[in-house]
Length: 294
View 1 (cartoon, rainbow, N blue to C red):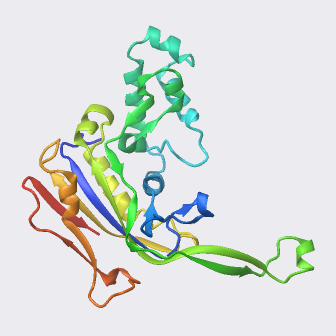
View 2 (cartoon, rainbow, N blue to C red; view 1 turned 90 degrees about the vertical axis):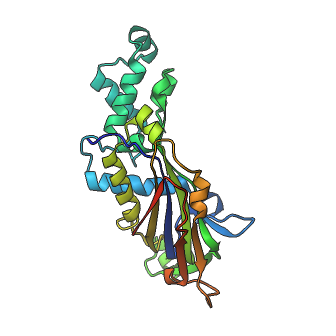
């Protein structure tokens, strides 16, 4: 594995959805998430990180150092206990800590070394937390905020029919089944994220190879995650700001403010990415470079 990153990064992700539901809200009948005060669409950080995890899992297929800790159908304590078995640690963690004061570091380093998502996003490892170990909570160097749509959205509820009836009894009374699905006709979303070289060095060992894989996963996170509910989704651009130092050369907000997304003249209701223009101010703070990936 390559060396740990030495530079801080800030980044902006621009992605869009067409005739789909990018992130349903279970508290609102799975309708697309909306800020009720402004009407802007929302996509949670958890949703975006799930896509990144899925891509890495699909690409690496549990290769050494690239396993995924938070994955569908796998209880967290199964992975925790596998780590304990690999290190020869007994189930009684409180007793084990008394006999091995270095147990926290050993477990943390093992989990960070073997699981890409812990090395990247951090994790709360419940088994270790309950065992009163300090390594149970790992703060990851990569953090992503909620995505918000560039313009307010108007979610639509579409009625659909199905010719296959569920039961024999229903088939005698009706020819079709009725259903509903929620869509956003079109929306462009913007998410902002951060990469801390300081946390990478001190805690998880997030490396240059991991960083390259992260950019690749972000750019491709929707390409192998298609479903009828999500419609057509794509990452349109990833704008990366690289600092010349570990702690950074400028506040994140100044870099994010340098990225402007605006509707083109004559466009009232955007219906495609071409209806927008994305610009990055050339006069960014000294000690920071910008790269636009797509």
